[in-house]
Length: 80
Image 1 (cartoon, rainbow, N blue to C red):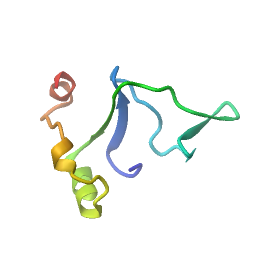
Image 2 (image 1 turned 90 degrees about the vertical axis):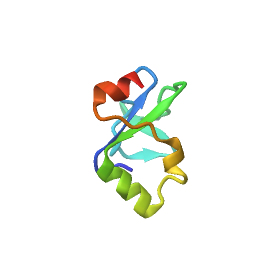
Image 3 (image 1 turned 60 degrees about the vertical axis):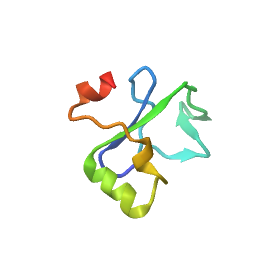
Image 4 (image 1 turned 180 degrees about the vertical axis):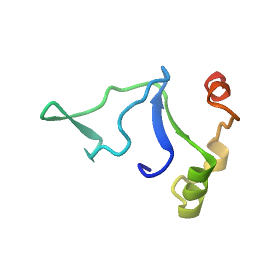
């Protein structure tokens, strides 16, 4: 999921981590230590239609159509 137009945001709307960053079992390298990222109530995966096609083609996210929230703009998506 680190390839293409995709990023992860938290419940406060901020980017959670660098999606292409190397990780080990959910730990991210930070200041010479492998750390567990801060926990949040909700985490969202944001992507465009091209990325959706890749997900569907590779069956990356099972039942993805049932989980989608879509919008025509970032502003509209933020409101939803």
